[in-house]
Image (cartoon, rainbow, N blue to C red; front, side, top):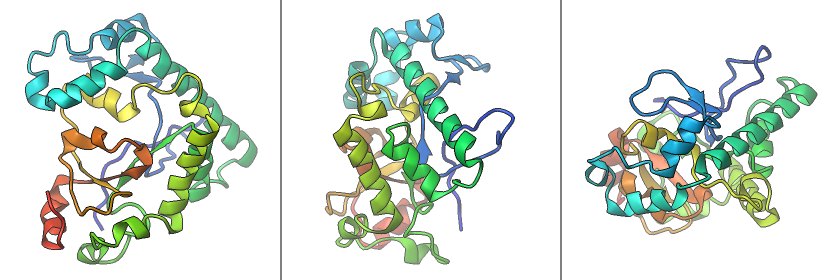
Length: 244
């Protein structure tokens, strides 16, 4: 089965630095600024200056991202955006370290992901077909029926992890607290790389049979309702009745 490249949770330095988890995303402690190759702390003054006006030096931003996505990102950025992101990154790392300190590596897997999601320390990053129930021997069999997806997404591990995020939001935990995360990690990455997002996206809650273009991910407001589909699989979805 093809495995899409995803962003993975960090681990405690010296304990399990190679630990990788599919399907979750956490704020970046450090990342390279545009045109740079070396990552620096997102708490650094350079990041603060960049995220105050992230499109100031990107002349083709509207052509690459579209006006609607640029407006969405401009609302998320501005003064304090870098400090907000870095603060949540530090809290996410602390939460992860605490889990490893107590459980070691025994909580790796779905339980590990669910604890981080329920605490509001991570966000889901569901990429088809790397999440249950889409892991089956043949890719063509993994494509969900458009009319059945909303029901499928309520059950199993996918449904449980979506509920973890809903619980975190309802309780005001972590990234959903008094100072909510303004810019998701994947957004910070593609803005810093001066690139458009790459994957098409399905609304797990809508049941409308639509594949939204990569730059329209933000029209699906709840992060736990987004199922990303790599470009190479779009034709396969269309052949099974999905609309682009």
